[in-house]
Length: 106
Image (cartoon, rainbow, N blue to C red; front, side, top):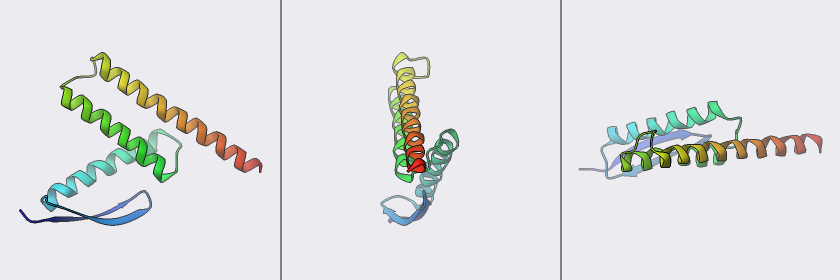
């Protein structure tokens, strides 16, 4: 199979990726990532692209762990991972609000 190319426009940056995958498949992967980034953006007040990317990565890793383990949300480990992910998001969000208010008062 030939190499696929997909143009990415996400979080204020643009670039092209190339992989040994079908371009249609790569496009679906990128669309899924974009959807997850939008979900995170709508649920937190974080605007920093790097932090949004990290939080999205945490969410995707959580989904991957759940899928690989065949575990549903009733699994205590899955529930704990989700709780920890939300806690991390809340802490970063709180830290950013504090940082923004400090910068505004300077």
